[in-house]
Length: 364
Image 1: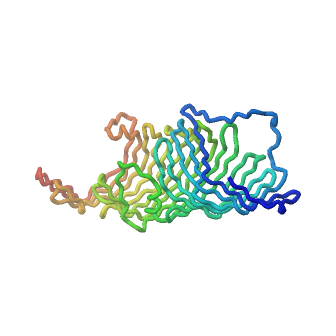
Image 2: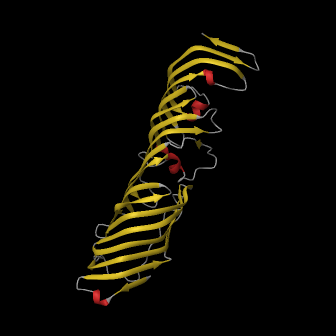
Image 3: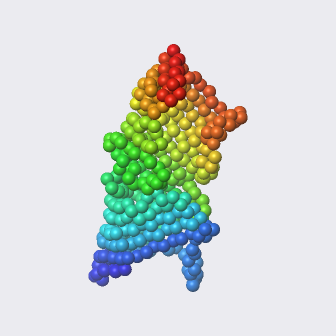
């Protein structure tokens, strides 16, 4: 740490520090598997609960952070955050109980894991017009202004931390919208997911919200609101590409803030497969043993169906179906009054000729 100042610039109630330079600092905090966090032991506790505000104003127009690393791990939640500020230039203003840090920085998110899953890695991040305020009297830290840039994306965060017991009352919101592929490139997708987005003009709009108490063992309420438009999806798991995908929905972790109360709510889902279309609404809850409830409407045009065992297919099938039950039981067709499915299926001039069996199905 280097501190540069001019004694002649010291006045009665204000101190100006020309430059503060912090190089190669490391901030490390680890919470163990039992949810215990490190405690600082003070050799002398004679200060008691005296107020910790600074009686004079301290100002520096040049606070530089270079190669400052942040390591945060929570073994109980299986969370990890490794980040760094490569270089930054801030203004520092301390006025008794209030600390204000403003300016710009360039950094990198080396790794971010949640629940043992890597969400982000090796992402460059630039912070612009940052204004961070700290009120030491109220134990409140909040971002008053600023935005983040990663790749070609601009992220607009709202952040607030207020000390509460052994944790913090957190309010976090991050919003972004723009090109779907650019957003997708931020995430580390699992290797077993083979999805390819084909339309360069596909769009996405997201809002991530976090609200509630965070301590070493509890999680706050989390919600991800999203909308995807004009996406074309291809996958080895799909017999045909999905075109013009439009989906509106949100994911949240429910009242208990855990997998047993997780919800995926899809308010609107529609797409085309060749000349067929699908419209649906659905709710998936309880991610331990998922329950699905939904409404599915589709018109299937058989004219475009090509299969190695089908010589020819024509006609249309219209489906309007409601369903409710556990995914595991629906898959295994355990229809034991726990699942519900009802609706209607209309068949119009269906004609299918199979190659191997030579079977010919015709429904006028």
